[in-house]
Amino acid sequence: MTAKDFLHFIISSLVEKKDAIQIEEKIDELGLLLSLRVDPSDMGSIIGRGGKTVDSIRTVLRVFGS
Image 1: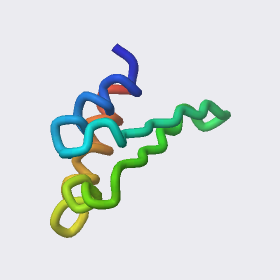
Image 2: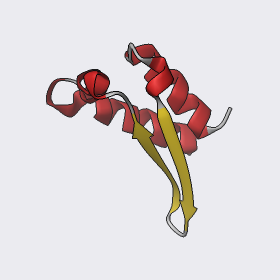
Image 3: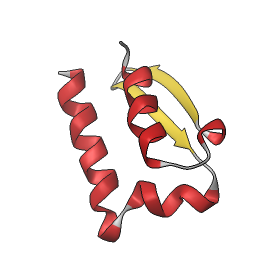
Image 4: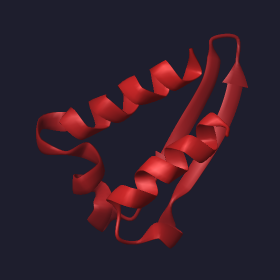
């Protein structure tokens, strides 16, 4: 399973409009960058209260990558 697949798995369990999920991969000298786009109505679910959900997703992806 790649990091992109893992992120898609996590995000698809949080959003209602699963067909609007777009994940872009970029590899540069710093490593892998994943850019996420979801439907605007699902943004609150991804960000969470005070940004806690998105911070948790970032932490899980860092652990996945190491």
